[in-house]
Image 1 (cartoon, rainbow, N blue to C red):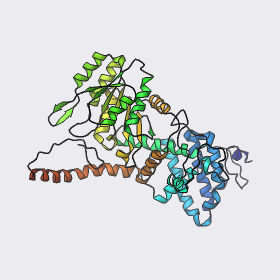
Image 2 (cartoon, one colour; image 1 turned 45 degrees about the vertical axis):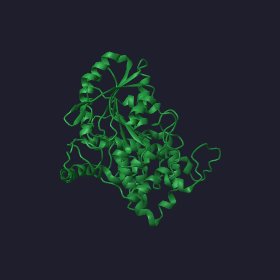
Image 3 (cartoon, rainbow, N blue to C red; image 1 turned 30 degrees about the vertical axis):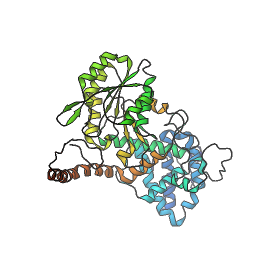
Image 4 (cartoon, rainbow, N blue to C red; image 1 turned 60 degrees about the vertical axis):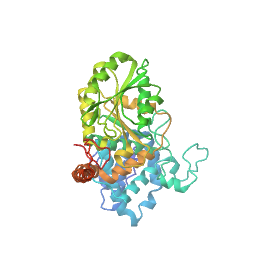
Length: 443
């Protein structure tokens, strides 16, 4: 009577109760109504079922079964009487969270406490083959560490993310790490929408800083525009941006900015004239910037996006500091609305306060962002994805919005203090509206 339970890799119901797959119950679809029991252990088991169902919905169905078996082998220590309450709490939160992520793509509103976070990461880690009980790792070429300290530092996520041909692909040996990667990308996409780019369709975390991530975008465009030799680049005095174009094998065509008051702004006439001079077919893309060091202000993204659309030229935006700035995100949203923006790149450390070494590549064309992810050779480190996942789960969307609000609230006080200091020394304060730090403000 319960053959369907075994076929679906569920726990066998201990009670003889007629049940059809898909029936609704107080514990949700796919849970036997006879299992609705007040005991904590039964509720925890039901929550686990839904958590694994959410994992299958994430596109890793072929590998979730092995993770479920690993979870079953390690279940006993976690469901002891002393820990059942915490396990129920964890499973209810995780189950709700996974549903929200995989079916709605939403970041949790309220942050999680550290113990829940660590339990959640443990649940994911034991789905990786290197953490299976009884696994000795003989003959393995990866997933082995000599130091227990290194293993703990990475929460035992040793396999990294992606496969040899795609950084966003599922790794057969690491269902947990693959889920971690998909969850992180979903969280980041939701935060980008929350920050102001509402029509973004896809993004992924890449374990490289902004400069190399821009290079990856340029290399992806190379296959689409084989005649291209040049990249149009309104000047910013930042070496890594310049080197990102050189490393990709293209010649930067530097467009000098024009001085308007105290600000350096984009020379749109010079950009369009250079496009006509070189020829659109020989231009890989326009490489614009949202925020840089004073007195440089954001490029005129809307006008540049229109030029790119008119001449059918790709447009890559260096948005390294921009997620924290509503002004920068608004410019990207408007540019995509009126013209063309193919991808925009932002730094993890500058926008999410995590260690240096990661970036987010996002865009409005899902297929193009997937092409960029497939351009990455080999697998990649999961550390940047893990860092930003922990940070966003700790903050929640409400916590991140609070940080953005604090920037604006703190600005008038800081501006007043700086202005008083400047006047005491008979100096002039150059006011530029878009700051770089998470603790500055845009107006």
